[in-house]
Length: 223
Ligand SMILES: *Cc1c(COP(=O)(O)O)cnc(C)c1O
Image (cartoon, rainbow, N blue to C red):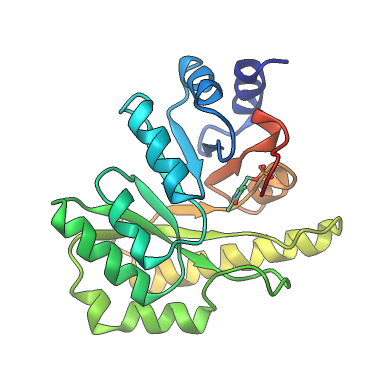
């Protein structure tokens, strides 16, 4: 199957309430354009230089999501155009995003990345750290970011029960954070979880946004 058919096939099987972020990292612009021409507009990238090049060369109605670990000194480069930064894992980073968004006179959507996996290598906030961030006076004063939900990744394992439990935990965090800080805020609505290998489990556990790369674009040669 070509990229357009794979994309449309996956899309047709997702519930209407679930948003698909097509993860195009490492793949050339030509394949992003193929997906674009099949009607897709939301793409995810995890490296700043690669994202900036693609954003400059591809149609400007693409909604770009940043999904990788983001260093504060790289925020400036994506602030003019990024739609959502899904990987906010510190107050320090959020402050920088707010500062750079302000310079561009924009509001940037942000998801708090929550840590649930057992792998030490994964990034993200614990519920205690998220609580501290959301209770901080610095966060309260930010006007150029909007926290639109949370993002998380399950452990890379074949143990479906473990994956299911980690997604359940993310869903619980989503409910808790929504209830405590965003109960009257309609924009806080995304629970971004699920990748090529586990998105059906994620949807079963309440995902509103899946990030799918290899099932659409094929294997990556790095990362
Ligand atoms: C690469 C990546 C994905 C997509 O992974 P696939 O297994 O190729 O679908 C999703 N989320 C994040 C954060 C990623 O880095």
